Length: 333
Ligand code: KG4
Image 1: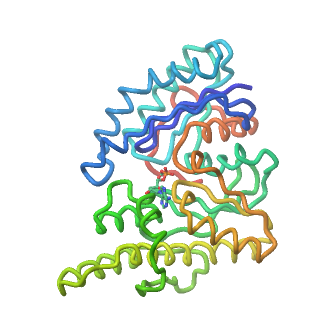
Image 2: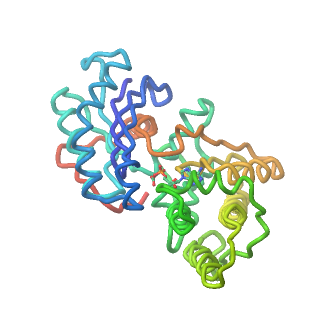
């Protein structure tokens, strides 16, 4: 079954063709990062407009590069939630029109379930149940993946998402948007113990997380150094920051896996590209005798292939939408 899939929940327009949930025939991604860099963050109106401008040509290109014709498409999958409402609407309306024109089913996909599914593409042998940590610009969730479509949140951030915290820290360190990969690079030469940054514990909740205190601590460290005229060791501050994020994410995920009895742990989302977090997970998984699933960098950030993969399993579960399908900024798993 070949699914043409669309992703437009934030600042990547992506169109893919995925066969039977696991084989990617093409994954076309147009990143708007350069358009937003000057503002230091995503500007929703600019994002929506850019999606409108490129989605039609990207879809055309995806079909050409996949080497198929329109009549080979069996279904259309699309992110319908969560995300920036205007940008999700662009992809959703284009997908609806495409499904109608081709006379094929329209399959709604939850964006975070798509991130989880990126692992099915990278690891053909992976099947639920397993535990997944989804860490992106807008979400930080420890997810109990019981089946391909039945997922439950075990822990979540109470405030900022991990990626948001990376991006805001990058901004205060004078790095370009989106800052995650720049912090990653800068941190490589730093001393991760030089700056004492908080690891927030949430009373009464073993698996929930908080990142806003960490963000404030970095901002205060930078401002204090500026006020005292001290030279900041930016590489060490970046390294200390990444260590604090990793120390928040990794032990909680491993503890949740132990409690639920899972030996399979996956990570997903843009922040899963982080070198330190990947390395810490590798060590922790080895220690606990778990198998770790880490998507390649190309499948960590937003992409259309992950939506096409999840769409296949949604279709098998009977989740097909009508043309009245709406977009939602927020949506439970
Ligand atoms: O999954 P994604 O592409 O979009 C959302 O669905 O949000 O994630 C984007 C986030 C951004 O916050 C970006 O700074 C972060 O992922 N990111 C990273 C790295 N690469 C991207 N964070 C830490 N280290 C990285 N190497």
